[in-house]
Image (tube, rainbow, N blue to C red; front, top):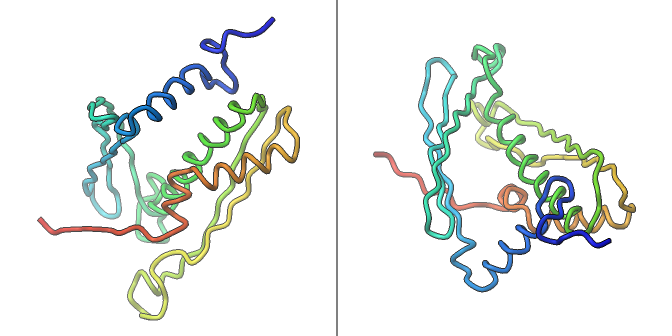
Length: 185
């Protein structure tokens, strides 16, 4: 018996809804335009809180309410009350790619049992502290490993991996320069 494509879910992804979203964007590119924003305030020492209030999709504003805390470890003059910005950056990249792995597997009819991404990178604080101008303040390289378990084949997982690298917004953002346009108010 065939499953109803509108109510069929694989890996928690509603395939009918995904097809509908894709079709709407194919018909009108404006439906696919999304804008995200956060506000971040200093909370003392090295602590900060970022607040998410809404985002826009297809020109419509959607209310959301989340708070994201950040801090530094004790050894970097923080209070160790929350992940530091580098850990949040890696978490954001991993979370974005995770959506891709889950959705790509679902679109191929692959049911997953587990998916995990382990990411690491090394910074040289001489760049951040301005000790040596030849040392970059950020990463030169970030390494990650993806572990997938399910009813797919190794070849299918390789296809999914390639698709995620080609379509993940945060993979894209990390893999090439982004113009940062800051102003001081």
